[in-house]
Length: 197
Image (cartoon, rainbow, N blue to C red; front, side):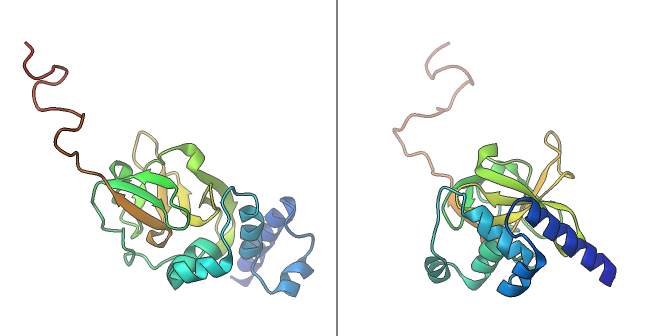
């Protein structure tokens, strides 16, 4: 097992080197940071929206900070949105970018909120993740670089994708109810206006 962890660490280090984040092993030891943390700092430096770590520590819960800034993972079946079924939009808890619609959410049985697709493919960044002796596809917010979760190719059709996302990385905006007198669908025969034949 020790060999497996060394190989995974080596693969992650190789990935980080390839992207120009660090140049040798000494950098990891000298800074006493995980390879994932170093990679996260490099990636976040190229996103449009940046927040100070001090600001993030003040406004995020310890779990939200751990998940979004340190690439942590909440325990399965404990997240606020794992059993959430209200209609609306799931947004990035750090910057508010809309990420997922509730109609794309499904129960995967994994214990984390799962979505079959994103609102717009430009709203997430996909990168290789070699942590925990596994090769996975990590998902991050494209605007602030915050870690969201992972993407797997075992979701429902038509996409076949499962965005497995930490609740701690999400916020939720409920769908607004239509107010009387505002434009929208009116009752009646589909495709016809009321009062027409």
